[in-house]
Image (tube, rainbow, N blue to C red; front, side, top):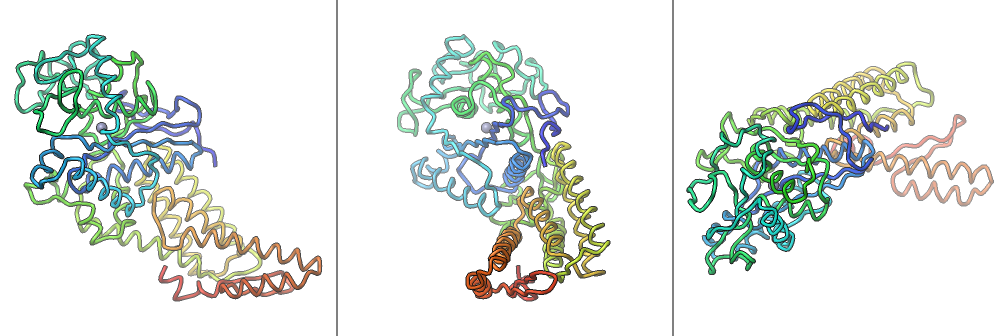
Length: 482
Ligand SMILES: [Zn+2]
């Protein structure tokens, strides 16, 4: 199914739904702000990263070749402070939490990222950008560091819709060496005994915003397709990224589609450690399967706020159980040789619902609607299984691969799911070869295939209507425990 050129995404920059057209044909360059690795990742992270993983999966399924790049912020005050508390080197602490982050992502089946880039590996690129911004007079040096002068970039505020005179001051302590309160640091002077690097502007550490533009400029060049992240990052972080990159390269827009995920609250409140409602991904995974969490997070549109409540996750669990049951119902259906009228109708209807699923995803990645399409599909399959109970091999295979296809896009894993569809394909191929051998009267080899298949639990039966087969191990118990 080719679905190029029909995908629509909401662009925060234009505040409108736009047709998605990558810069270079079928290639897509996507960057998403990664975590600052000083603590375990929480549910807000899960929401963001599950969504962009799903977006990447869908774009790939739609035929695009996606390069998904994510940064790891391993240089930050929060890391330095926590490392001090624990008596560790900041990079040692950062590596530990980076590992924990990968573990969480793995469990959540977030597998679409091509490259994780650590900020500390991009000091030369950061220096180059700061030098360029100083040269073009967008930046200035004071005794506390190097700052970007937001009044020098007339587009400042275009992403978040704020006017320069209304811009909030986002630093807690006013730095009197700065020209404007909203000027942000590209480089911050630090005492010699703290973690940092030597630079042409003295000892210190890079600012947060410049890490990302240094990384994307190196891998994607002056302009790329999608920048993702949570909506809270749009100001000042993403605004600052635009200012840096566009001032440095002169190319506008630096990013063509700014795609932001909505807020996540817990029991109606902003998640924070002081409120005691801080839920890490690990906490949640102790109670629920990763599939359940993904369904919960994808059951709201990515731009809508989402409120995490355990009873809603229970609902998501029921929904996941429905998926597993429907899949098992399908696998357990007995095989018939000739497709009934009911089966033909079912296959046609499932084809339409599959189309609906893709249309929902094409419509600003509406995973909530796509899930509804999937459940509709499963309802029909369940009803058919209850009513008729018989299906052709081809029909079963086709429905199973549709399930696998759609579940894959959403990053849902049914134990053995994909394997079964693959297994079915392989068995069909082997049986085809065996028939060919029999026609050529090479019975010895044909019997060998049959014997080997039996060893693995596949029973072949030659009937006047052709060869039938069934997987012994997948009947009853085995498939129920999938
Ligand atoms: Zn970022």
